[in-house]
Every structure is written in structure tokens, then in C-alpha cells.
Amino acid sequence: MRLTESLDSFFLYLKEEKNLSEMTVLSYSRDWQSLMDWLENQEKLDPEKIDPQMITEAHIRRYLYYLNKKGLARATINRHLAAVKSYYKYLLRKGYLKENPTRELTVGKTPRKLPHYLDIEEIVSVIEAPDLTTEGGLRDRALMEVLYSGGLRVSELVGLTLNDLDFENQTVLVMGKGGRQRLANLGGPAVEALRNYLAAMAPKRKVSGCKALFLNLRGGPLTDRAVRDIVHKYCNQAGAKDNLSPHGFRHSFATHLLDNGADLRAVQELLGHKRISSTQIYTHVSKAKLKKVYDSAHPRA
Image 1 (tube, rainbow, N blue to C red):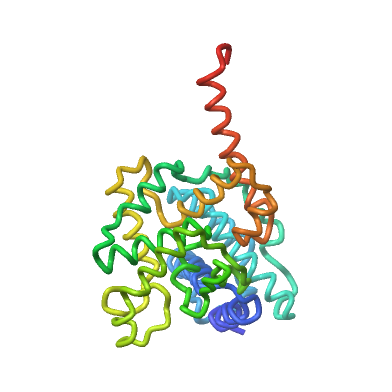
Image 2: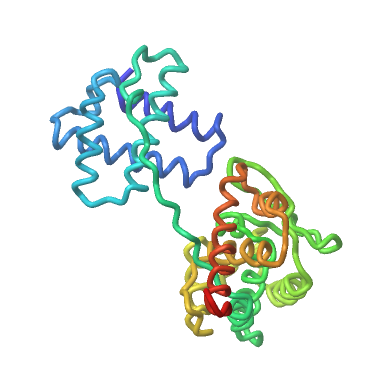
């Protein structure tokens, strides 16, 4: 099997059997395209003609060195290596290969960055910034309320439909990473903002017939990029110290819960994290905040 053919099979496996998101599969595809470009330009190997066994550990080591010389961050290089290792593990499981050239290659430890978040007062200022006399303002207020109230990822937000809402129980059904579903909570302000937004957009929705919860002003579904632009706009308008991405609302959600005494396991469930280690980053944020308070308030700090 040629390299390109086996990669097509691998990407299909990631999507249909591993149930990874479109964005994750696209990321794997881009990383492999980078490696194939390097093989063709630097090693004079045609990806259309070679088979996977022709790529050796030495090739991959030289490629990683090349990425490092380009100045790529350790986390980015680790991601490229992880994509390659995952592909060769797949080939071994399927019996397409007997030797794994990545067996001795290890992913370097990546220092974890503390997430950006806003204080409670700041995020309230951002959420309350939209002009509620306009359709766009009502929508923007509702989507930011939902982001913060439910701790949603931007992909989860734009994937919501009208049928996912449960106003009676103040929840919304979310499709998370890996096809895992969870119920996200909607606080009172989020429910009120959603009701106002849905009432204002009802005529436009009737014409477009779109079932997506959040629409653009033409009646079509809102995109990830549009949500990012909306969040940036109101962070700037409110004068927030950080120009947050939509994910910053999720970081703020988790940080505020832990700061106010929420159990780490409960926050893990609310965020839809598969592993507790993904949630533990927020304990570092809370500890850092406590240390800052101590340093500023204790007479002998």
C-alpha cells in the first residue's frame, strides 16, 4: 500500500472508528502534509510512489530537527510527532507493517501554560456590553451567556440546535469531543437572554428554516470564526485586561467554580473532560490567585 493510500485509510479510521472531530482529523492531515512536503523537498522521496516502510526512524529524526530549526514551539513539534506515531500504531494494528520506526521516539514534555481568564466583574462587563435594542446585540448577549453559563467550547456552541434546549430544566444538550454528549447548565440570565434572542429572530428563522441555535444576521448558522470576532469585539468594548478567545469564557467558567469551592471532579464533568489531568490546570490558577492575595495582604509575606 502506498503512503498516500494508507494515509487516506488512516484518516477515515480516525473519523469513523475513533470518532474524532473534523478539526482533529484536519490537524492530523495538515501535520502529515507537512512531513510529506519535507520528504519530497529535502529527501527527494515522492509520497505518491513510496510505501510507509521506506520512511525510517532517521527520516523522522531529521524531520523533527528541521521543525526545531524552524523555531516551532515544543508543543507544535510534539503534535507533529504524535500524528506520525498514531499513524504507525494504526498500521501495526491492521497488520500492514511489522516494524514501527517511531518506537524509540518520545514526545518531549511540554510546559503547561496557565489559561487566560477574566475576573467575575470583568466577564460580567463583557457579557452585558451588547446593545439589546438590536437583533445582533440580543444574539451576542445570548451566546456569551451560554458560553459562560455552560462552559462550552466554541465548536459545541455553534453545533447547538433548537432541539438541544430544555428551558424547563435549564439545560442544553452538548455534543463534545469524541462524540461524547453531556448536559450543560443554563443559569437564569442565560435562559432569559435566549428567550429574548429567539423571540427577536423568530421571523428570520421562519424564512431561513435553519435549525442551528445561533444564526448570523442573514439567517444562516453562525461559524466558529464569527463567534471569536464577537467575543473579541465586546472584550475590547468593555476594556477587559485580556482580549479573550471564546475558550477564555470556558477557562473563566472553570476558574470561578473552583475559586468558589466547587469540587474538581464536578468541574471535570461540567467541562466534559475525559481525564482529570485536563481539569487540574485550573487548580494551578486558583493557587496562583491565593498566592497573590497572600503576598499582597500578609505583613511578612
